[in-house]
Amino acid sequence: AKYTWVEKDTCIACGACGATAPDIYDYDDEGLAEVIYESDANRGVTEIPDDLFDDLQDACDGCPTDSIKIADVPFNKEG
Ligand code: F3S
Image (cartoon, helix red, strand yellow):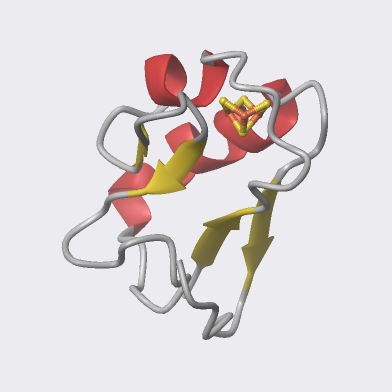
């Protein structure tokens, strides 16, 4: 299983992740990325399905500030 979360404190709203993985990431009112998959709301608790793993990894690799976090266990963040 994979879980993901965006560290908004370091996101610079570059916009790459939502273009690469639109099913996983979108942007808040300030243009900062967040996980929108199902009802995750950037908590990092929603299991990302296998068929999105390539998008997930590409988005992580493409983020210029390493703000996209991926782990095998839930993050349990709040927003
Ligand atoms: Fe932010 Fe990185 Fe996405 S800077 S907009 S999390 S690619």
